Image 1 (cartoon, rainbow, N blue to C red):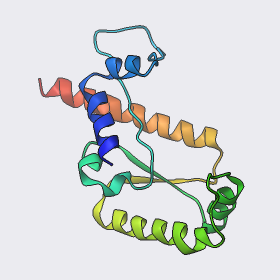
Image 2 (cartoon, rainbow, N blue to C red):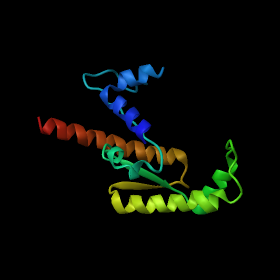
Image 3 (cartoon, rainbow, N blue to C red):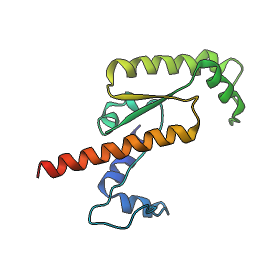
Image 4 (tube, rainbow, N blue to C red):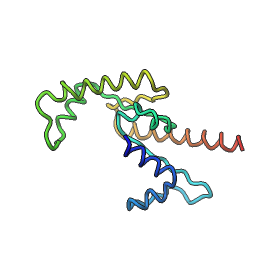
Length: 145
């Protein structure tokens, strides 16, 4: 988590420099304006359990899938080294349940997404929600000037 915190802090200081140093160029979807908005997506199911990181988020999403779908997806991936027999049932799923329980007892404002929906639908839902959050933040910023 220390590395992730360092990366997030670097991005927060200057998103453009952060992207350029990694050989990435921000993709413009609108003409340049006086104020540009950068959105950082932080991914991982343990991110909400690390309070210093969680405190930085404006929005939180958790994509849920049932045990059998998760196990099937995990078993279709190739890991080096490969998972030993019984690893999913003996470690992966129990740790997911443990960390999820901790998250649910200490983190509020999580939007739960149905991971069985088409990815285009999930993307559209999250995109709309993020756009509304950006508008809310700007409105509050302008209103409090």
